[in-house]
Image 1 (cartoon, rainbow, N blue to C red):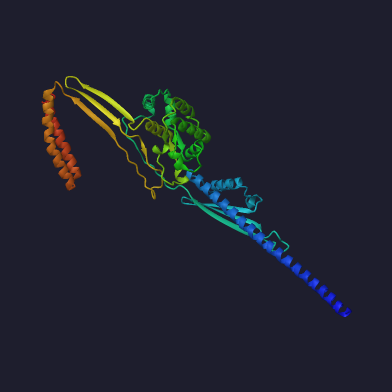
Image 2 (image 1 turned 30 degrees about the horizontal axis):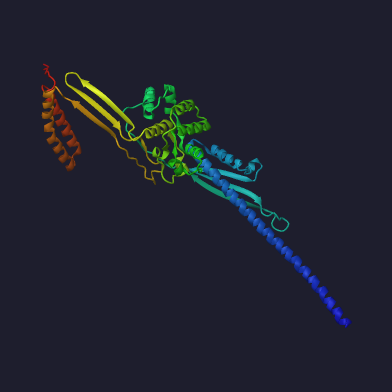
Amino acid sequence: MQTQRASYNYSLHSQRGVATIFAVMMMLSLLAFLAVVTDTGRLYLEKRTLQKNADLAALETALLYCRDQTMDSTAMDAAALNVLSRNNFQGTSGEGGNSTVTVTQSGKAVTVNLAYTVRASLFGQLLSNGFVNLNARATAKACEPIAQLAIRSKLAQIDSSQSSLLNPILGGLLGTTLNLSAADWNGILNTNINLLSYLDALSSELNLDVGDYESVLATDISITDLIEVSTEVLTTAGDTASVTALNTLAAAIPGSPLIALGNVLNVQTGASEAALDTDLNLFSLIEGAIQLASGENTANVNLPVSLPGLASISVKAKVIEPQKLSPIGNPETDEIYVRSAQVRTLVSIDLSGATGVANNLLSAITPLIGDVAIFLETVVSGNVFGAVGNLLDNVFNTLASAACGGIFPCQERKIA
């Protein structure tokens, strides 16, 4: 009985030693697996962070190069390093860091290559104690061609030399009085505003999500708010030359009616930020908004003309649509077009008391009907230039014959 108990105690003691060995082996295996999993996740995170930094550096450097294509390789390297430093990326190996930054440019594309050296393992006593080189590459293409078409009808051309006319014209459209000086109007005429920055500022003003430009364009806003937001954008950009004039203009404009900016400025659906990163003339934007706020018919002119002893002529001209701007986009892939009505003109001639003149005019116009018919037949046959020339020749000859002796006295001189 004692011998059997002694054997049993020896067996338990032996098994207890084996369990300890297996427990130690299990702990070592788990520790090794933990080291592998930790290092794998760490290297994956380092690689992902490196790629993110390469993407950011390529995007901003390409954008800066698009705006200033005189940048050389040194300037592009500095721009990329500036982006990386803002994202807490360690410096280059030449600055005591453990990374290498290379920027190359080809055509309109900028490529950023990042090489980053990290320790292979955090568990150097168990695994390799060496280093691993991580590489990331990003290519950004800016300077995509963008285009916009603008079409509008004018009754008169107004430039900086005629800026004093803008007070009564635009003030009349708004039903208010504007008192801007010629220098104020010249400042607005010569000011451009970045469309992307302007739309971002409007989204903040309207409490909309940043980047939701379709909602920005569809939301009603007053002209005063449009102008005030433009002053904020210009001030932020450091362009304060026209801010005082804009504040004066905003104070004189009534708060209603409200307009949707999308009716003045058409932006291609789904347009990228790169397509919106363009400059827009501020005066054209304000002028279009004022015309839209004034109603469908943007301008009317009634011009009486008197011919003593002959007739009274009245000319009425009206622009029947405000300025239209096409969507902004890439003409290679997007449809860039715009359509608008033209100027409607009515000429009334009062020939009361000038019966003889009326008869002469009627007799002169009647033969032209046949000439117009011949003109149309010639155009159909394909000889457009010949048809136009013949029609003009017949019109001038007929009117000259009617005028000479019929309407006005003619004198004929002979030169020896």
